[in-house]
Image (spheres, rainbow, N blue to C red):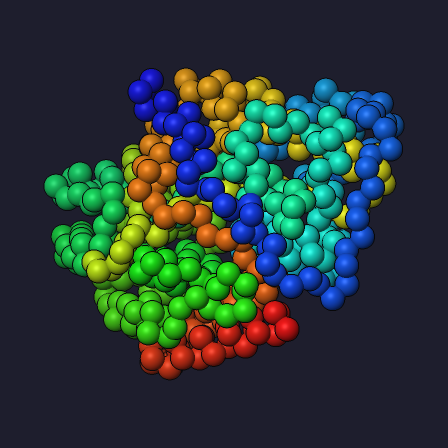
Length: 455
């Protein structure tokens, strides 16, 4: 265990190489928004939340029940130490969260403290929905002195800090190691699609347990994996067009067309009811695998129970790919919304600092959101991690050594492009469109979106 937990510390040093350039490639080359977001003023004073009476904050995040319980406990700990601060927690499953924040962002306001995925940060920063964190760092309210600089840079847009990562993770495939062991089967750390298909067929023939393809991934991760595996980036440097053509997209959609209707593959229609780890097919025994970010393993393992031991590997790639497309990425970044008074914003920054730095708080969270970017937290937690967390840390270390460099942040129109891919995947899976037509339509629509964004 001691040797394995050293992986946590290794991740932080390896991130310097893996994540280099992530911040500088954020949105520096993207066009300016039509309306310039108002600049945040520096905090009026260096008062602490305990000195500010009757501060009430909203804190919103997505996740499974394990995350909800641990995060709520940390909220209670902070309020106990800061009697004049009230934090109203709000959490949902991942699918509902996207609808929630889209509705609120459309109304021009976000919660005081909120969890955000990395591809939302540029869009919300440009729109003024997230406020810059730099003034609170400079005032000493938000302490990032023990945090990895390159992970910090992942939440930077146009030179300003807008969000901080709650942990580092990587795209992965979880699998039922107990089942595979019972059948005398195994899977490599970097499986090919051929290996994946053969294993899925064998498991189904012997047990009737089906294979999950990629339905758990709600946006363009399968397509992104194919694109980056062949050595391309998803966008050109100036975000004016895609960085690949439709021949690459065809490879992705052909795979879906080939596997989507196989009897050994889980019916994609059944995934409409999958709203979180607790009801994912791998936890109920319907499938032997599932695709998630590595940090989701804690919730998956809790939902699966003690009779199943989960492990993880990289997502499958085509045999002729030129690199492992998985990369270290910031997990569940947290930022401050554009609502409330100066006192509210100072208290929000202090709470964010507490989550990142407080050892007792992190002994409750136990890196459920990913490997901490805080070196002191990693060291303090090395003896407290559950076996699944140790396996996750080992995997993140492996990807930091063997994976691709992190891509640039998404442009502000990234969600529109993911929505187009989602429509194309559904059309191919349910047989209403050929892989070739889906690829051609995706590339045409995505390039049109990017051209308008750059225009």
